[in-house]
Length: 480
Image (cartoon, rainbow, N blue to C red; front, side):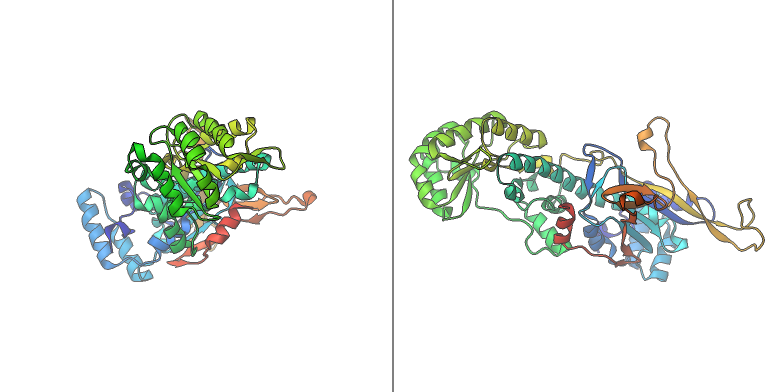
């Protein structure tokens, strides 16, 4: 097994000494993961299943333990060799923990429990927080990508509902982020997270991850598109021939093709080349040609381009009173973020143009320009089970039999109230679309006809994937 897949090493250095830091008699550690707030008021939970399938379903081996011991000892950390050996000998190398989580794709208000983890073997109490680094990372990144993508979807959908056709929403935000992330794995995880909300992508890794970990056949789609090298290789004097070749190669009835057109002068290309020399060829092809500007102020440039295209190709007026271009569309793929999208669509609406006329390609801002603090993700211990030997005042009187007593654990720094953590064996409860994180079932809203039910589902236990979601189910949850 690769060292990167050795769960004994998939942690932070300081975690290695934590098995010696808990109170004597500790038998259980219960922790939860939440978004404590951040840029958005709701999160779209996604990505845990991929992590479980990739890293938790294979048992650790003697070789894993031996190499971890060698590396961490040399690294300067105490290695819990006895603890890992116990897992290998007692549990055949499978991790004795249970993970519960909200169904993937669920949209949950921030400051609520999204997942919990605790050990199932009292001798492995230390394992819960040992896994924090890997588990939190496995959740915060894809959940944050899915969350941002979901919120942008609401923005675009709102403009479509006001000015155009809402059924076009699935292909209005295209993933251009594969080259802008830090690794192939990030492209796959983040790309799949975006596909929870949209169906347009150029990040093939995202399609593969959705297929491998969520049983999706093909979760995303793309179209033939030009890049600057395939246009500029024709030379400036032959710019129109480069565009003509694109239409000849890919312009079939009902097809869509995208052509970057700002290699030299975007306004000349749109007015005189696309709008004059190639106009009839585009119309006769039966295809929709998507013009892509790739430089300049996105709002200013697209506002001018839609007017030029309208003059050259004409337009229809839809039932909502907004103009829709004939034969051509626009896609903005440079400098795209939520603010850019809002600004462009707002400008279009003010000029009487439908949101149908433009799509967006989002790269680094979609998959890379986020971090754990975007949604303020944290994993915190909220309860510990300690063996009571009947010698303390809290002991059960009379029988003298040792038992486990659970104690609330809570962080409450006076310098930052926003980092105050939850206490107890917290659950997530739902009633009528309302969510509440609490240890016990909240008071039922009988006057409203609602009763509270637990949202968390057991997804992993003792080395087995207990609950599996298909990508269709994840999408369905996100669209509720």
